[in-house]
Length: 490
Image (cartoon, rainbow, N blue to C red; front, side, top):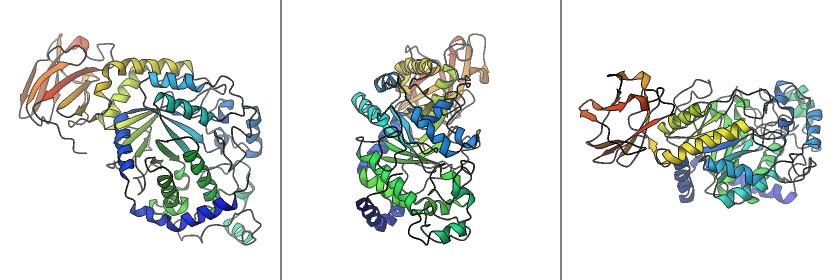
């Protein structure tokens, strides 16, 4: 590992003295505008890619298989994604209708996919490829008008200064994993112990902050990411849950969040901060993330937290894996993914849909075909998704609604759960009609839809053969125009 410069150390130390202002965080006007833009985009693509793709067993292979870091890290010398083409990636993603890309700049295995001076364990210095993946992708995203976000891992399964250890990374061969905290602390009194001294004494019952050298390492990399690649839409943190044995209140001290968040907002005020910690957002965070679940649901067991008033994002896999897994061919159908996007928008959230590229730098054909299907659908129905709010009706048994101004878009996803009135039509009941409905029509062709409005809501009579699942289409959209603007309680 390369040493930090004295200049950066002094910079980070002086900044630390002012960082405690972050708990009183007030977003700048640029940040507020960026939040609004993010909240209108509704669809992004997640990319999990690193040297772990060479194993074809997902991004957690090092942890799951207890691989020694000393051997795992040797894979970098063989990583040569000869078919990587940033333009082809961005072309396919833009055609899908996605508005932004979030890519792993550094995952839990500690390997950096960008040109960093904080460590030589990176795509430029440690591989024969010698090209800055992040730099090439950033250039292409900026050229094509796609916003770029960086995933950044808070934890590290290889570095010795990631200490105290959390609930992962114990089997990767680090000497520090064999040492007790008190022994380490005694050794760290020697100034030649590679910066392993804890930043403070143990907080009784509230966890111990990670080491100062590890904080400086992360700050250096975050500074590089925000100064080398142009405007960045967001930093997407992950890994705080590694120390989840301690309370929510302890986490900012353990991870040095206030300093990190203030650094990011100072370097790029419009750069949003999200943290996949499965908790209510902390001050300084600009978006709220839900893993593998639409906000308000908790089927995967990771999203039981309350929903904040920040812009929302759901991240979900296209198959069952984040990183490339050779045997995982269990891809969700295009219909399922389109309906998932619609349901997510119905909750007023963005969908961040994941792809795990192969080690040669190509996107799996299964992913490409699904991107195309989503793009084809959004080319027709994008008006009902982009720039909308979650509908004021809430989720219903037949589907969801989205809205904009005085227009409500009714997304019928499963008419089998409605009340049939005959073989040719079904009734869709919409509660909470806020004001007088003026017109109802099919979104695709403008054909008028019969309706009845009373004090209980609105009833729509829809052609049965056009409604899923009778129809092969993933969604029947009805456009309702009201006399006055609709109000969403969020």
